[in-house]
Amino acid sequence: MTTVARRKTPKSRHAASAPRTARRQGRAFSGSPGEPGRIGWLYTLPALLVYGTFLLWPLARGAQFSLYHWDGLGQATWAGFSNYTATWSDPSLRGAFGHLLVLILFYSVLPCCIAFVLVAAMSRTKIRGLTFFRTVLFLPQVVAMVAVAVAWQWVYSADGPVNTVLGWLHALGLPDWRHGWFGDFTFALPAVGAVGTWVGIGLAMVLFLAGVQKIPRELYEAARIDGAGPFREFFAVTLPGLRRELAVALTLTTIMAIRNFDLIYMATAGGPGDATKVPAYEVYNRTFNTGEVGLGCAIGVTLAVLAFAVTAGVRRLVEGKDA
Image (cartoon, rainbow, N blue to C red; front, side, top):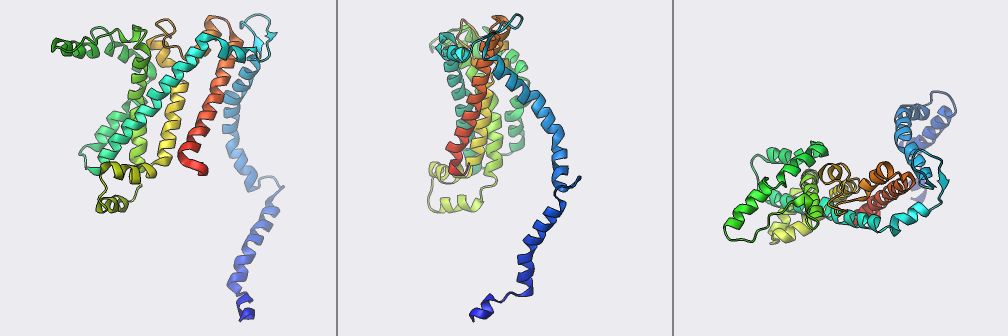
């Protein structure tokens, strides 16, 4: 029996020899011009050139400039890591990084939570015109942030819709909550964050809707047969099924918060005072307004490292050890 079991059939011998044949063919193709592997690299070469020219090379030059004191015109002097030290020792820059943490809450955490609630509700009921609502919610993602900033300046203005509605509520006896939102030291940063929440909900919701359609309906039916309510069904079925989409949504929205410049520049210019200054705005401000090119580059490199760390951390946290 042992002899029969170990005897190889023609089919098994063919299967065993297939990898060796493939390796021999690979060795036969290696080293000669036009081989498949090198042709593949040639296809990627234009993309690698563009990536290296417009991303890696500026990043390397920025890292080099961050080691110098330079006003952008005269002779640069060696600074070592003093620009990086100033990034954390300067109170205004520390405040900018603190504002960034607040904006990450508005840009990333709140949109994902709101989108989760909406998707969980849609997974239990059939909504007519879902494509229309999906398009409307995703619309802020395709509008330039400059246009968004101009539109929200009007929304937050003294005679805009927000203060008009609050005026009606005040007329009904509620406290007067009207403010000059972008000009108020207390409410300017949350007002900017609310705009980011409005922009980010559509992206998170579209990702979650695409992910929830891949969850087998049998899991929902089994959960309902077991008597699961909406909350238990969400935490037992929907949330585990959307881990990868949640990682993507958190990564994209967090990076959107980290590189938030155009909205701040157009809506508040970092004001009032330093109330809405963020690191991305300080890169521009220190480089072009105050002539501290080295410090601006140091802030930019710090932001790049922070973006890589946040991306890796979010994937590790949400997707676990498989990330």
